[in-house]
Amino acid sequence: MSTVATTRERRELTPTAGAEIRSSLLRRLAPLAILPALGLVVWEAAVAVMQPAVWLLPAPHDIAGTLATEHDRLWFHAQATLQTAIIGLALAAVAGLALATAISASRVVERTVYPWIIASQTVPVLAVAPLLGIWVGYGAAQLLVVTIFCFFPIVVTGVDSLRAGRPELTAAARSLGAGPLEIWRRVTFPAALPALFSGLRLAAVFAVTGAVVAEYVGADRGLGFLTEFATAQFETVLTFAAVVWLAVLGVVAFGLISLTERLAMPWRHRSTRRRRAS
Image (cartoon, rainbow, N blue to C red; front, side, top):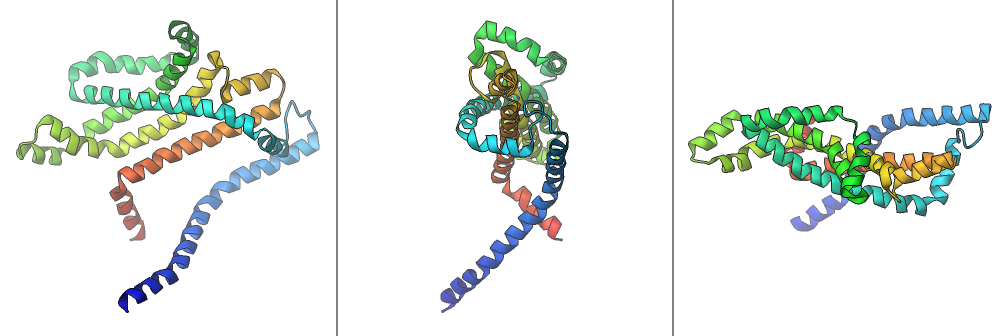
């Protein structure tokens, strides 16, 4: 009888829980929609009043129509951009974490390499990208450009987070006989995860930007290539549609890293919810 009663209670509570989740999402998303909605209304009204040529400034409804009619074409190019962004981000994550670990563990590596990593950010990637295309080929150059875009935030956040650590836990692990590798695996790295994911979220957005920049150099497909082609043909409405897709890809990339963080550190978000509830 108790099992049947429990099952009935769960069935009765499920719709209520679902309604609460939908209400919570609505409360969070509604404020975010106010500013874009207001901007679109002003934009639509301005175009209706001034009536510029479509190639100069299309109205939002024109862009929405292009998003619908050119969906297959946009998705074809988006796949290329997404593939380049994902591979470049993965390469940057592996190389950035490895270098951040070396810098945080060795003063010699820090003094030898870290200043040059920082100085490299003063060099415009767009100026170097054509040279990379000549040296390694345009396919590999696109991945390198994305990796360069994503590399810096991962390294910087990695160095800071790995150095911060938890001194009391490190001392306790050392007193129990743990070696340097064991301390890094069980204490230093888990403590650095929140900051590392912050760097990865930034890098995920930069990955989309880097993929677009890379496609300006020598690609034959991709949303960056499409925007360049459409602008040259005065198909401004198609350019705007590609930009919308790029914005969506950036948001999705940011969200996927955030979701991965929740899956990797569920205890952190449970404690955050408890603090908010209290």
